[in-house]
Amino acid sequence: MMRLPRPLTDPLIRANPVTLRILGICSALAVTTSLVTALTMCAALIFVLCAASGLISAIRRHIPQSIRLILQITIIATLVILIDEVLRAYAFEISQLLSIFVGLIVTNCIVLGRAESFAMHHPVWPSVLDGLGNALGYSLVLVIVATIRELFGTGQLSGLPVLPTVAGGGWFVPLGLMQLAPSAFFIIGLLIWAIRAARPEQAEHPDHSLISLDTKATP
Amino acid sequence: MDKPRGPWARFLARPNEDPVKALGLAGLVALASALTLSTAATALRPRQIANIEAARQLRMQAMVDALPGLRAVMEELGVTELETRLVDLATGRMLAEAQGHDPETAARDPETSIALPEEADIAGLERREAQALVHLLERDGAVMLVVLPVRGAGYQSTISALLALEPDLNTIAALTVTEQAETPGLGARIESEAWQALWPGRQIADETGAIRIDVVRGQASTPYEVDGISGATRTGNGVADMIRFWMGPWGYGPFLDRLGQEGLG
Image (tube, rainbow over all chains, first blue to last red; front, side, top):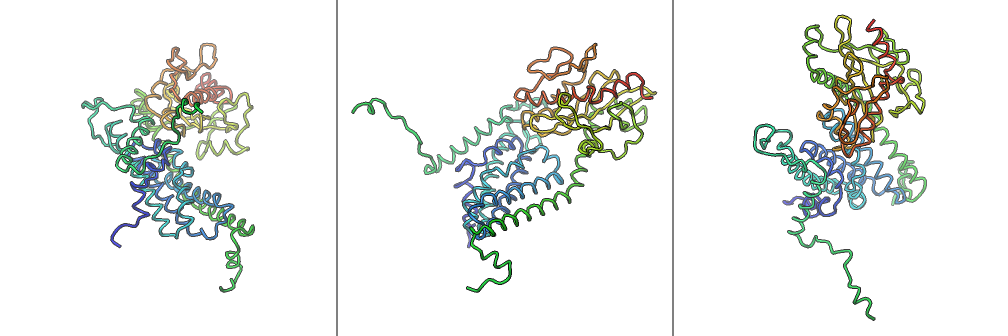
């Protein structure tokens, strides 16, 4: 097979968990003020999502329906605590910056969503690929948002100066808004708009539409 | 189909909705998780402690560097770091041995800590260690600087900080937050240099000895006030309560009184 398997490539752009399903937004806002924190978060999520999907898929035939969510969450939480402990031992400063957000991967809907909708019904290898694909899709959005926010918010990328700031004698005035959470909403919103403009089939139908009262009142 | 052999195969062959299998599987997953995590936590603990200690040392160094003229004094005295002493908090007496004392472990152990009465526990600590470490710089028997480790409940985490006092033991020389997990972007800004730079020169108590230091909304207007961070009122209150607690009679109050009256002795 020449092409990359679909579970891996599909969630990158077409079925991206962030832009299509609007999942994982909370952490996408919180950890994207700088590229380094975003990349660390991505690495943590890639590990958790691949391992969780693989493990859950491996025991999927023996998971009782009645307690499946509890088992899935237990496995996910174990992996999250594990990566948090590892980060605190080997990447202490970054783990301080990420604070609670590594722990909050437990509540990241992407992880439980892939476990429930894919890993429970597919063999181990496709599940791991699906996990990897979704984690990479999430990472792609995070890296794009973090690059924009760090570059325009501070004039730096991964802490290295790129645009000379006024404070440092250059011409660039950092946009303070970029370092605040709302800017991540704007950037993700623009990304969703761009993807849906290119793929009109992703546009959602309105849930509600206005009905004129006049036509309703007339018998 | 072959008849399953052995207890393990029979267990796996049970229908998934069978209560024995449900309970058994839940137990196995929990056991595997617990084993993984306790192994990882135990194996990684020494590295994590070393990281926290190294970060604390760095902050202490940075704090010393941030205080004007302090490095020069230290070089003149031929010391590279502050002297650490163990203090009995209830009596305020300095004790001889400061080696290997871990305040956080001590605060958890009922034998080495005291329960705080609710009305005195403004920092939300519940228990406080009986003996605490303080860091001093002395010159010709006179105190040049006192650095007190403090901690208290913030909005969503325990905040730890180093509070440095000038020789009058009432003027803040510096405040450095050493550990916190407050809301990123809001409360977590207490760790920023810009906010910590508001503290030097603030007074803790007024002439009557009443503790007045506070973090206020908006602009600080008296020497006892520090500007709060907008959107992080409860974190700011936590920092203020923490300092008020540790400067008061249940914190370093007795030690500071004794130090003010008797000197280093």
